[in-house]
Length: 329
Length: 274
Image 1: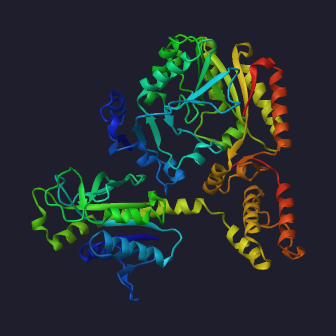
Image 2: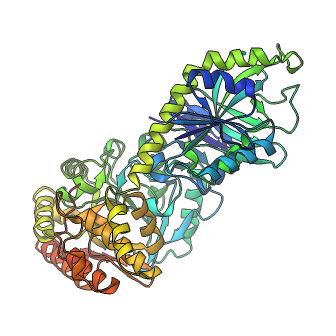
Image 3: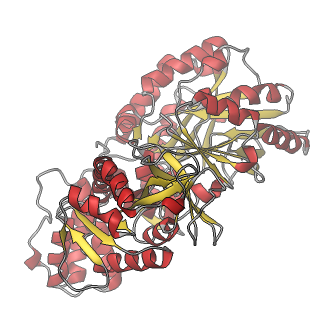
């Protein structure tokens, strides 16, 4: 339940602001000059705010479409990400957002048309090869869709841009909008998974593995292209058993030949993010595991990473051809 | 511990009575009242007095679980006298700066507040007007996360009852009328603070850490290593297992101890269960 909504001066009269405000008639509306005044100050507690996050409605003036870090992608050469929102409805212990942001408030940038214009112009820069646009980098793409309507607004734009590809990355089961429209060839709905036991321990407020699989089944039945994202890989003593079970379960339910891509990502955090996350959750077992710091990044030692990666790749190759499996940095 | 910061004695008296606070007889620059859960300081009017009071109170350093609440009267163009509000946007007229105390307690309605140098007689904006809040939040949010620094104001004057007719006794009456709601909000703020401060501690870790530090000389780097290893031990060790898995006396120095503890931590089962 949203009890407070901060509204940036620049978007006070934006039609989308009005629609979102009407959704929360009981919320206090607080004016601000710039969203950073609320979102960026020091001396805020991410975990306290996570108990009852507020909404911040703002305008994204620049940096709407960014190149992805090297190694991020599912086979394309031109990879970009965009964030119409900062922060997430869910509360995953491994999530870098809690190390990156001081505030847990949800920032929604309501100037979607500016994002779409930037996506169109970025795509037009090279029409000889597809440009991939990844949604869900700083938020979950679908979890807040009933409030933002962003994906519903974005899909018609991508329908006009056949050379552009959209990845909607999510852990949400809010797929009603997608099921109500015809599937799009240049759009992949990518679901992130960790094994069930790990998910229950670390992915707070996230729909269960079972519910996410059911959402995939519905989307595939409707003709949508689906991706699977095993990211991040989490180590525990029985990881081999857990990941084998997850992968067997996934491919017993999803149509493997209809899976667009599977990507595998390692657990890796900038040192300062990790330190902040440990301060927030000092008793968290995930942060007490066999992690090491190399060149300012915290991750599992290479020997563990390699074993984990090999175990998952071996299990995946029983179901999916190598050319559809990608390692993400 | 809640730190109640109040500008005027007339604002303080109803809270002192309601919360049954006792005067602290120790000599000091401010009048201080207290009980086991609460300290109330009468700072005097204006931003400088409030800033001095906040600094002095923080300097007492008595509690590690402090939360901060500024309570007082304020003007408003149209709100009725006696209305109690929590400030959700605090602006400093002179500095042209704004603060947005995150609102996590759903007990009171919110209102914007403007801190001015001189009493405002014409209420140009539809917001609360006071003379201390911006100094309070600017100072206290340096000591404490801003969710635990809040401002409550009771409307004491408005366009129909302007400041010229301000009556100190009436102001005290308005605070007294709202004292139960203020005390309830203060209790909720304390509860929020308790959860916050407990979350960042591991039961028993500080005690064993002190014991180990007292035994050998640890360099600054080794102190950091020790804390990291103990944190990992406390997180991963099965419930009921000894805080440290071997006799301290078996180690000759800090380096040997860290080596042995590191080995023990690495042998613990790695699970993710909460």
